[in-house]
View 1 (cartoon, helix red, strand yellow):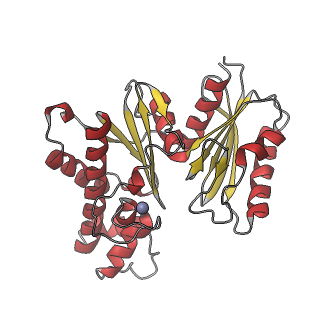
View 2: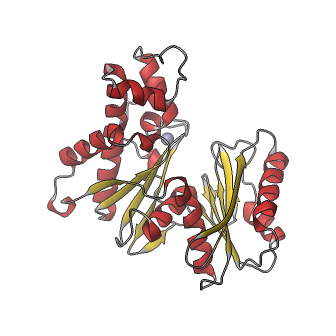
Length: 306
Ligand SMILES: [Zn+2]
């Protein structure tokens, strides 16, 4: 299997990444570029150029794609919320045209993160895992019984749109009170600013500077992470009670703040996960950093040719 080389692709609203990965799950060659603004043609041109750079002359056995969602698994199309130029964009067909006669498999980026962490990160050795990505948005994916759970449309496990506060703030999805509307980076910052927080002179209004202020004891900054972590913990508890899992792996740029977010999330689990079958439900930080999605996409591709 080691000799089998696959191409993994990670399509996000901020960046596009690709890598060749061998049968042991090791990245051989990689590249990334910002997701361009522009129409569908411009965005696709960037993806195609990236794939050309990474694939080089290597003989590739399959391609695995993790894309920001929603995805349309039946048709191989994607409509990423944060790539507005792509609505029902035929991503699988376009990639297949570049790599004819090889399997091309697609999954949501949250599912790929969960699979990557399950195979070689913080979910290793655990058959039932929820992966959550807290970043510009909030996504996720489920591994159940050791297998990826895509759901009929390919969007199962999209925990960002679990409603944790029915009267909460509007969400980019059109709903209200979703985890994403409270815990995503932009939501966190918007709430903190509304409550009177502003970055120190010369600092950016971003999650790291909010985290820095929280570390220094700033009340509003601390409250912002407490609120976001609580939303996350309630969502994890809900999923655990629904599908009987004991471990949630949390990654993404916002989760890099660590216990500022995870401690209130664990407190929410302690408060709400009370039935005996939920004993031991744990929230752990992701281990693979930004590579989880790529490695999960590679695992899908490797599974397709093994
Ligand atoms: Zn939503």
